[in-house]
Image (cartoon, rainbow, N blue to C red; front, side, top):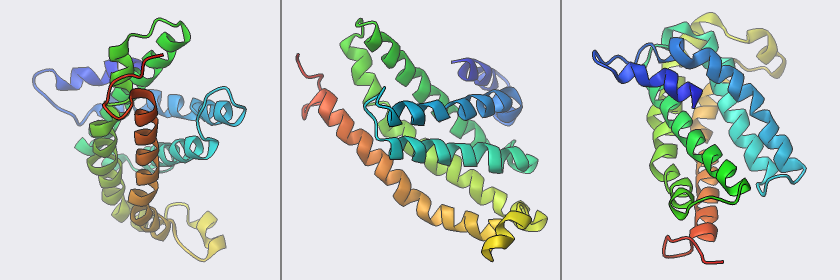
Length: 198
């Protein structure tokens, strides 16, 4: 919610989404690093989530923001960064609000519906015109600077080639996560899209 509050002023007249990274980038980098705990929680059974899928999402987002976006200032002002940050922030505000209310056993039906419905537009928006478009824009700068060349030389490849491979695989990996959440939605809301009765 803090990240979302920092992003909202970008929409105030005169509208400019270019300062999104400057406004919330460092905070989101920190929060995303801490989000590794979600993978740990899934691994030890604190939450009913697949540890692999939790790690997949955490790894993808962490690579995007720390290994790529933070290292390429030229793309930090892109509208695609604002799209990514907004999609992430809105999704997380809904998700954590649902977790908190469910833990307190006061979660209303509309919040559960929102938790398992809002992802339908937010996930594709965050991935397509958000993350993937940002990575594509970063490719020339990655190649020009030979980013992480020392590390990737050990594998006889470049980070640029790795990033191209990631972009090709991204839709398939993302689809796995997307379909998983649809299964969760069906489980929580039922076929009719309404919350199952206890």
